[in-house]
Amino acid sequence: MKKKPVILINGTGRSGKDTFIGFCDEMVPCFNISAVDKVKEAGAILGWNGAKTEKDRKFLSDLKMLSIAYSDHPYQYSTEQIELFQSDPQYALMFLHCREPEEIKRFEELGCITLLVTNSNVGIIESNESDANVLDFKYDHYVDNSRSLKHLEAKAHAFVRLLIKSAE
Image (cartoon, rainbow, N blue to C red; front, side, top):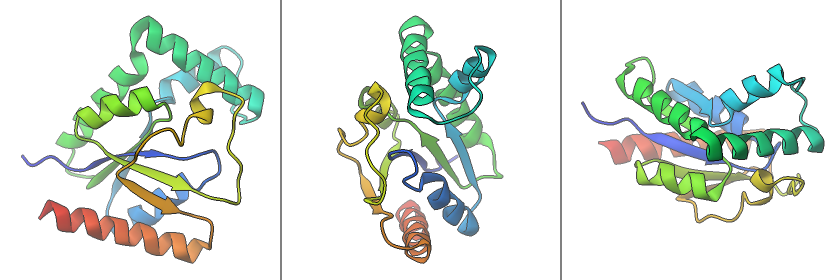
């Protein structure tokens, strides 16, 4: 079986990553997870209410760093999800959200394509290690979401066409 594309997607908060994925999903079914999904579940048990304030972002970043150091769970969870995706005929593309350059390198070694979504209309979040280092990586693809939703939609559709063409 031929491997299907796994795209490691990154960008600052509110840059438009999920909107971009939604536009890609209009063309082909997309599987969308985050390396921090299980960290968020643990955070909820510890009192996190789902908010995305600077304090919340720092809490989740610190919790992720602790879980990486303790058990490497975010990476293990993500690789399990990649395996499930590869065997699931329902999806054509997988998007994996991950912020930290060291972690991104690990996924790149697995063959993941890297993509950064930027938006000059939103600032860089510097309150935590994960968000502060988003730009500290050389990505395979860059998408600027500083213009309009129509422009982002066109970029997403062009990205999907590029992936389909390269898979042929």
